[in-house]
Length: 321
Image (tube, rainbow, N blue to C red; front, side, top):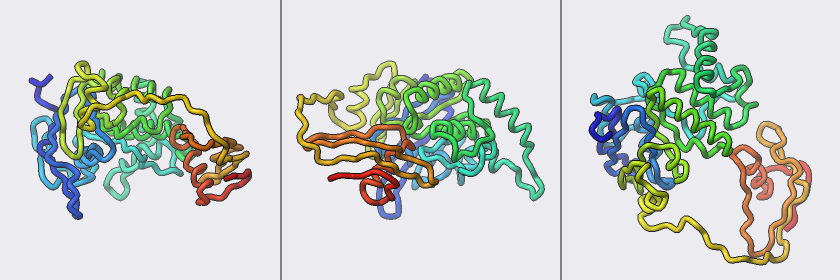
């Protein structure tokens, strides 16, 4: 693979913010056609900043970008998309009151005052695309009524509808259930079979090991190295990420919980749109324990914590300390 000409190369990219923060310190990455490249690093390592530069959202302080051997400069995401590069952000950029179809074609109406998009042609193209990928979304439902996993599908389809060849996914599994992760990976494999190139930003070792062909590791704004996934181990990647050996298993001695120090009883809390985000939740926390609240984003965790902290009104139920 190293003997091929990269479809994309970012060479010696430096990003210094006005306050003097050096987010990127001369990063070089190469991406080859038809591969899934993992961009791995801790939170704050510079992965998203690098990809925002590639997508035309940020201007590099120094460095060059080459697409199929030719130097390019993107002044905006529209430039990047016109050159076949699309990015799906960790935080979605959808208009909640629009339906999926409207969100996907938004911005493609043309440039003339009377220029319109053929909505029915767009619908047919999308239905064909969804059929090929087995990646369905309800096109006529307002986005605000759709779960987070479906909203992400809309973001991906928005880029594929624009015929991008290089797709950047920024922490795409952060909002997905395990089943949705499986479905996403199946789609990524199909896109790879079609010749698409994917850059998969993550800090999850198991997912990078499963879905990527090669992994480039970034630490504190610098590339630590690039390895073939088939030759890597989670231990090696973790060491590259943090600069030291990491114990991937936590040994916890058995512990008897103490008295109940905090209790939530039959708690009901509404979300920002008036929906019932927390419905009759009850739990207890004991002295000397670490109590975990797990769930995919958008399932009421934020509203629960805000209600407990007094930042959001409790509709019903009680909190005991």
